Image 1 (cartoon, helix red, strand yellow):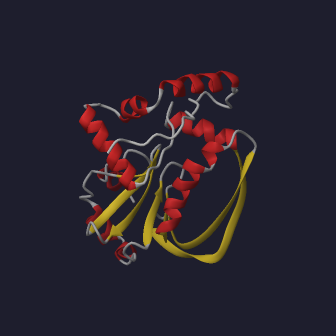
Image 2 (cartoon, rainbow, N blue to C red):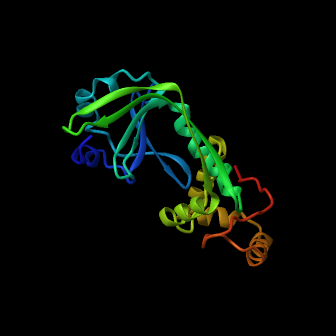
Image 3 (tube, rainbow, N blue to C red):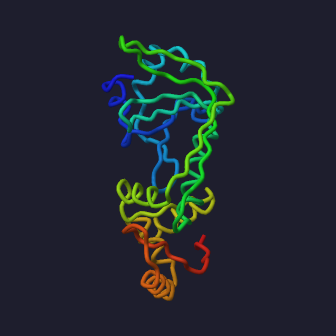
Length: 222
């Protein structure tokens, strides 16, 4: 994929996955964000041109397979993988990695599908990846925290069930609030901020990042 073709997709970061969405009846682009997997709201006007130049993309199974694009390294990487693997990284990031305070995270990468690469002559090639290909890596938690602070400074990860999100959205709209932070802060009891400040002063963060609030659960008004 050329730089021009990638820029035409108008995605905010250099990591995303694309799949055929049966409900939307179109190709959907998703990328990681502090809120988890986020759908791009921009129209993918150049996707058909890209698929025309790479027939294997048209063969992706709807709602099952996705094209994973990683362009944040020295060499761009492209994979066709099961779509659940794309969401797994977002879930692990939001619920597991953020909760760790130190040490290392043992990661096991299981590879399958297709890999795209450019030959020295500049031609795009594809090759199947064996189902038993794997790689083991122990990632320091500090690396993860520093990475999140660099790309998403002073941000936390939060994933909500659709019903809860819709109620929170309705509350935010009724109250005339401009941001999600304002909506959640208004719903938190006053003692929650005092508790968060006390825990923050007692804790020693591994990287300069805002400590998550630990407040009693409170129902969002319907």
